[in-house]
Image (tube, rainbow, N blue to C red; front, side, top):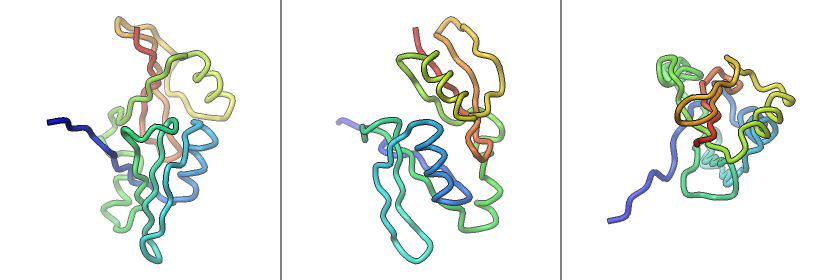
Length: 129
């Protein structure tokens, strides 16, 4: 049996501002944006045109969901963006105003830095050794 994770939900405040951040600041691709009803959309993004694993941007619809925006993992890093060129992506993201929470560091597993998205969700930018 072959299995995979197809998508991970990321609760956001607003579809359009989230799409803009991920496309413009992180150079992600918009895979799909389909209106489901007058409020809900099916919005998939990915770091490139691959669709092996995508992020589903889900606009908060309840007060409970709104509380989770930017803190879906209780303050821990939520997502890991792997790259084949850490310094290229780090400098590009920094020049576009992405907020980094620390200086890049070398670990036994690779080069890494924590950054946050427009809502404060923590990510690792990581080039594995």
